[in-house]
Amino acid sequence: SLPREINDPAVIDRAHMFHPGTHLADFASGELPSQIITGGEGIYVTDRDGHRMIDGFAGLWCVNVGYGRTEIADAVHAQMAKLSYYHAYNGNSNEPAIELAGRIAGMIGLDMNHVFYGLSGSDSNETNAKIVWYYHRILGKPEKRKLIARQRSYHGSGVLSGSLTGQPGFHGLFGLPLPEVIHVSAPHHWLDAHPGETERAYSRRLAQELEATILSEGPETVAAFFAEPVVGSGGILPSPEGYWEEVQQVLRRYDVLLVADEVVTGFGRTGAAFGSHLYGIRPDLMALAKGLSSGYLPLSASVVSDRVWQVLEEGTRQNGPFIHGWTYSAHPVCAAAALANLDIIDREGLIENARDTGAYFQQCLREAFGNHPMVGEVRGVGLLAAVDFVEQRSPRQFFDPARRIGAQVTETARRKGLIVRSMPRIDGIGFAPPLTLTRAEADQIVDIARSATQEIA
Ligand code: PLP
Image 1 (cartoon, rainbow, N blue to C red):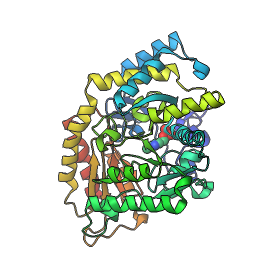
Image 2: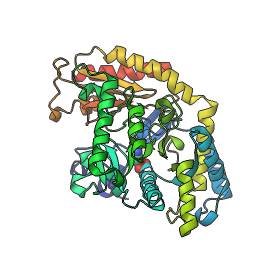
Image 3: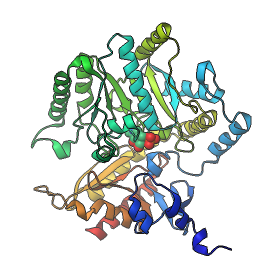
Image 4: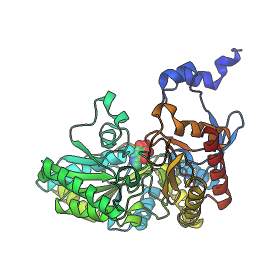
């Protein structure tokens, strides 16, 4: 038999797995340990040493219904046995994907009635960009090609979606962003507002920046604006008062389509069904993934408004089929998982729970951290929250980034049985627990996070 270390999954992991977003040299040397998760139940995950932790980040803010849902497993099993796969090209279809498309359209409303399926948030944004380009071409404006996104945003890791992402790490060494993509400021009132500037005034200033960018690029060249209703991995930044009102006026003025990236905010995360509902956003296109299937199987959707759809239909009248798609578009098994997931969300009132327990959780976080000398800001909405660390509150002074305070608090919390997400962009920690969270579980998360912070302070 082989020596134990050759059979050791951690050794094979180091030797053969190429992990995303990982320091490869530290992982190969063992300085960054392999962290193998072997089980999940409710809001808990367990690693292979039997260490049980609350998953305060729902995987990558996707396991919205929690782990171990046998009804999703049963639906997947039944669908696989009945029809494991068939493609959706050229009018081919399958029952779960059809039912799901109707369900998604019904949940969103807003005259968004057409659902194109993919497998990841990244690919849904690739699709959205191509729809935008196709739309303007059909309307005789092929020069309308530039895509405006925001700094701090995250829209994916593909060549185009990674270009839309407004975080430098996704660009430099890959030779991105593509020249079509331009970034403007994302709102972060606490960090960027002028002294005494109200949220409304700040929102107006950012809308003016957007307008100035469109004018300097030439409105006839600007195709679309991509934005998350709440900036996610760039810092968990709820939109300030008036922001969407102002921004949408600018976009309408220059015929710039609005793509709402609801990959994180969709399906209840903010306490509303969609971030667009929360903020009064009327998107032309929407990106969905994560909470659509709670990560049980990969699934994403690009949802198209009726206004854009009419142009796409006309495009095919003139040119023949819309030549875009994936082998796994409308995968019946993924759709069956998503339907079972949406059934749970409905039956258990998880959107309402995200709103109500979310409000309680936000209040507990503010009580625990609001006056902490090491905390700059506590912010969030629904079951989405962040705590930023500062060396000194007033005048504001940040920690030397080399101290990695957010990462240290994250590591300490993990030892104490809580997974939160280290957010290096803000030197803070992020929370996005499953939407099943109870008040008692919210208390536990806040207690562990506070004691981990005390240990690092
Ligand atoms: N858009 C947003 C807002 C996201 O947060 C993410 C992933 O975190 C994506 C897009 C990309 O999704 P995926 O990782 O499934 O490609």
